[in-house]
Length: 498
Image (cartoon, rainbow, N blue to C red):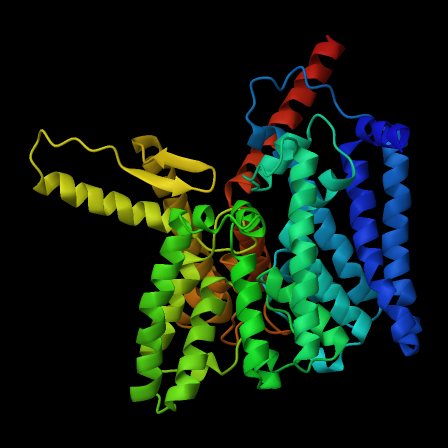
């Protein structure tokens, strides 16, 4: 085992990714023995998964990792950007092939469905009631694996010199153990326990075991794919709704905080600023939406309370499971959901959006700015906030980075909105909602995302989902790295020619 691990660590990073993605695509075949009538779909998974694994092994044997003597000056994001982007784009491509080979979707829609799955967005262009079990499992398993992240999954098996840079570039800020592999294994252990917990409870409360497993994977990854066209609401069960709420909250929580909770360090976990901020958001938005449903929507008190709580948590965690029709809610409720959709979940979690801690820091910055204007000039304060790793100061550099990210975030929102406005000839608000839902990896749709959408709309939504899942900057850094490597290659060839 040690010699195999050493050989893999010395081989090509890209080859390892090809093997990993191939294995993940083969995983849905595990359900075939339980549904033997779907044996015709075996080749749809065996061909892309097996070929990818074989090609990956060949690449590892033929190609070594590039030397890193020219990389000392680069940041972790720069060093890890290209491998991470390759892993995600390759995963999206390979994940789309079972849909195509089985004849269920054309390639363009298969790529969309695969992107939505791996990025944990949850938008869909398939009729789930007409899909075989193996495909439904494939969709949910993509979301579960995508929530963990390709790099985190790979690090659990093998690790090399570049693993730390890729782990950081993928958005993992968590260090749960002394070394990277132990941290990744801890994350997997926590998620495996939560998955088992959710699956068992769903089954006990009335779901079939297959549906329970698929819904637990999707809820925990804050994704939203369902095996029913009516989503969670199709079960009309309060216990199932409660289990879903717990899984969604767990999935949208920073991995480090989940680790604290698993070790029963509750005081430390609930001391973190973003956890308190999420609690505050729920405490404010839940009664507002509930009262609006009662007085504007004519909904009964009991149902308004349940639907309001579920809706608030579903949207702020960017899961978008539903127990009722959001589009039938009063406009005021819907406007509040849009605000929650933008906020998103915890940083370092499976949830999308701007992220809780960034919104919290912006509000703190605004409050401090007002306070300084009202306080005496000699009043000097050193604002702090609680991170999972401990107490930190709110520095001018941190505020600058936060506002810089949010500025870019809204800039992309504007561009995506304008593109959808033109490509679909819809109102600005409808286009903004649709693109924001994809960009924040929420998955709600007002009808713009459909099988016959234009190619421009499809590509825009795909790019939005990828940017939202990978926290924007890695995408641009990867493009920069491609141009930089291409320029250096040309310069080396020119020097060799001279």
